[in-house]
Length: 381
Image 1 (cartoon, rainbow, N blue to C red):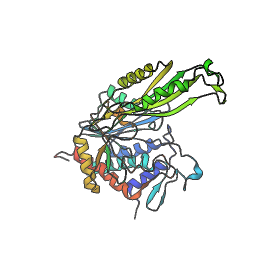
Image 2: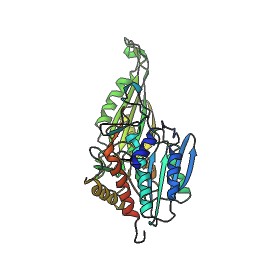
Image 3: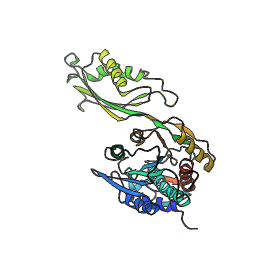
Image 4: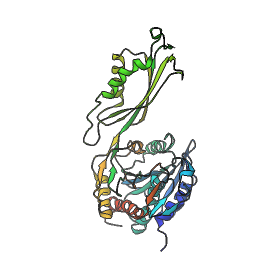
């Protein structure tokens, strides 16, 4: 039996070692597939990042498939059962870096669009792909820049499907209709260095920090809401000391992160942290980094279309969720009113021996095609 189009393209993409921010020719390969199907392709370079904007049609509504060709580093090569950039099939699975996150989704986008256009050349609206090589990295020259470019020329999507691997146990069991925001802080508590035998002459910043840290961890930041769990506060790193056992350190550095819901704002969280720290009369510096704002797509046309496509193709009743980390959906949501994320099972992403089940590739592609049919077919096709 000949290899399916989506499997073949997935294999081609995995074979390219596109470790972030490298694209390694993936987007050129995609453009070569899309141009014969009537897509106009524009390659947008910002810094060391390559982006692709491919569009077919000029009318609305505009449905965008968004994804990334860059992958995370492989980790120790000797721990991989097979070469990470040599797509390998065994026991019903396809192994390789990017198999699940997210080269299979990109291949499914392209083949779904090809099949849809071939069957419905006169479809309503427009189809586009927004592909970056800067999602797994700092995310400063990728999707965010393309969205700014699109907004500047008034080319605003109506719907967007991000191909992130959202499924948990079975293909289609989870679709993300939003994501929490990420707000990080680096707190420096100032003390006074001294000899541990003369504590009266020193001021231990770890001791000063401890009561405030207890209050921060016990604080109930919000209740969340219908779509989001309560905001969480987590410490990621605590640094202090000179390495010597007989020296009271002069400062302590605490790194922490909020994954916050739409029930809170960055400003409200910053103000509450400041109140807690000041209640302990601490001498401190605090620098903030906003990693991403939350976004939420209420139940509507797009979520109904993709949920219906999943049910028709797989028999799975999907659940809308906002769990997990950040994604490029946070940038797209600023210019697009309806953004969801859907892709393959995520159990092996970023791990050694990343893989996808072979029997999910065709259904994944078919869900994307069915969603196109639901949103872009009119009476004349």
